[in-house]
Image (cartoon, rainbow, N blue to C red; front, side):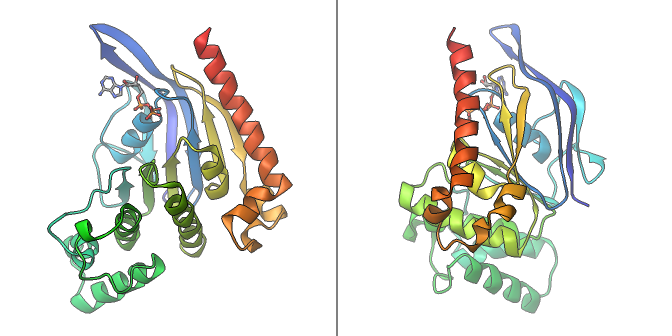
Length: 265
Ligand SMILES: Nc1ncnc2c1ncn2[C@@H]1O[C@H](COP(=O)(O)OP(=O)(O)OP(=O)(O)O)[C@@H](O)[C@H]1O
């Protein structure tokens, strides 16, 4: 049961010698194998939430737990994908995916099967021997995602993983991630600025307030997606044309816009 629980989490940072309340009473329970996206105004503390689940940052009060245990450090049960393609530049595609598997102590044949499986799922077959600098940004990010999934972690933490990609590549990556997420569900915490992306990918979307970040609303996407059979649509554009999609997207936009407006006045 790889669930993630934020229990009354606050975080205070110091700025110019003053305390700055950044997160204020975050309560959120991400279920095992659920895909949750967080959207919110810049600086509301989205990345801080992700870093807490990763064990790279800690609450000032409250607790963050994964699979029932308080998070105290990073661990192999939680794979992290950042916006910048964090591949080893001196290793090939194959070696990059293999790296984490080696540390798990798997036999050669077993590792080969896993690597082949995920490179195929991410449309990277034929690029096994390429080095990162020989690949486009989108392909590099596909390698990073293949590497994260290959480790078979209970939890995937993704912080704007498509943020640095051009619009066309981003759409392809979103479709591939949806495919992967449905075939191979994992507990995912996904941070994004892009409202459409959150609605397309997630089972639930968490909208945060401007700083200090609180949970403003949680929108259930999965029940709407299933009732309206989004997964039967051929492309992301077809899904985004559906009235049920537009309705959710507009709702989230308005909720976020109210946060920006509140911030300015
Ligand atoms: N280690 C730190 N020390 C001091 N302040 C920090 C630290 N980490 C984050 N902050 C501050 O906390 C606030 C929230 O940062 P965070 O990166 O979590 O926000 P975000 O919602 O992910 O923002 P964005 O959407 O712009 O990426 C920001 O004001 C940031 O400057």
